[in-house]
Image (cartoon, rainbow, N blue to C red; front, side):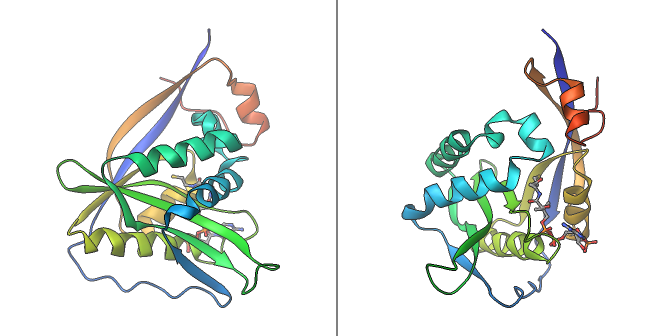
Amino acid sequence: MQSTYFKRFRMEVDLAATRLPPALPPGYRFVPWNEALVDIHGRTKFRSFRDEIDAAVFPCLGDLEGCRRLMREIRGKPGFLPNATWLIAHGANPESLQWCGTIQGIAERGGTGMIQNIGIVPGHRGLGLGTCLIERALAGFRVHGLLRVSLEVTADNRRAVQLYQRLGFRRTRTVYKVVDGGVTEQAIEAAGFGTPALL
Ligand SMILES: CC(C)(COP(=O)(O)OP(=O)(O)OC[C@H]1O[C@@H](n2cnc3c(N)ncnc32)[C@H](O)[C@@H]1OP(=O)(O)O)[C@@H](O)C(=O)NCCC(=O)NCCS
């Protein structure tokens, strides 16, 4: 069976300095965590990730049921942090309501915060929503006294890597995620992701 190795960066930001979170663009609003929103997070995750490189790295991200299950798992983790878990919505009434982005955070043992997944639905990207969602989550980690937050990002996901660097995240480690079978280099290239990093 053929295996594909995806190069990923662990990145970390120090929250000791005061940060000034940017305002959301007009019409958008943050929606804080509540238990009734677990499925909305799952669906928003799916719509954000289904056509992206991370759906090849983590096949569950390319599958609606997989995203729902993943969201329930994140919710069930002992370090789950409601204050670092947010949605962005657009539209004031139920008819025009759109769910545009999701982020989730957990506290790891040892006092580091960890961003699980951040996704902005296509059509709402490039407006600063990703920046706002990360800053909102970072403020939530701070509420819990966590002054170091990390995440993992696929090296070929340049837009995300650049965004994290702009927000002060620095690379601390390189790891490789192996995906057995199912994903072929041709499929990844056809999806426009370029050649995956091979060990
Ligand atoms: C990575 C991601 C969260 C960024 O969200 P976003 O709302 O577009 O982020 P922002 O608008 O705050 O910033 C994106 C950057 O791309 C630039 N950009 C320009 N045009 C863009 C476009 N059409 N779409 C997205 N970004 C664009 C922005 O100007 C900004 O650049 P800057 O950092 O130099 O200012 C989003 O692309 C996404 O959900 N991707 C798929 C899921 C994913 O890979 N998540 C990350 C997993 S680690």
